[in-house]
Length: 96
View 1 (cartoon, one colour):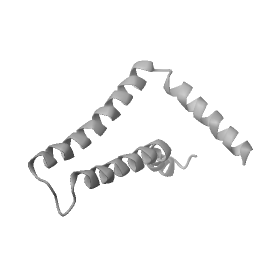
View 2 (tube, helix red, strand yellow):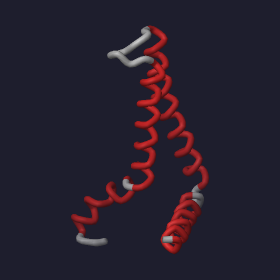
View 3 (tube, helix red, strand yellow):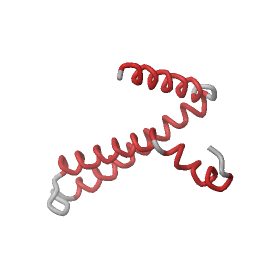
View 4 (cartoon, helix red, strand yellow):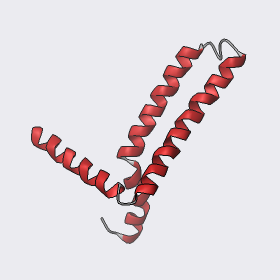
């Protein structure tokens, strides 16, 4: 098990160093993600400025839901997205 964790750490280190080849693009992606998260949270904050509950949910409950959604979405984007975006091309060309 420890061998696989070490191997995953190497993969993560390689991926990070590859992403840092284009530093400006890397930092723009980070800024873009932060803006996306802030807009989602600000949207619900704005809704709850005008109402106490929404469909029986108070602001704290909605923020927990939004936070979990954003966390799951971030993990999904990190782990699966690059491969899924390329899958159609792989199927079309018959390559790995």
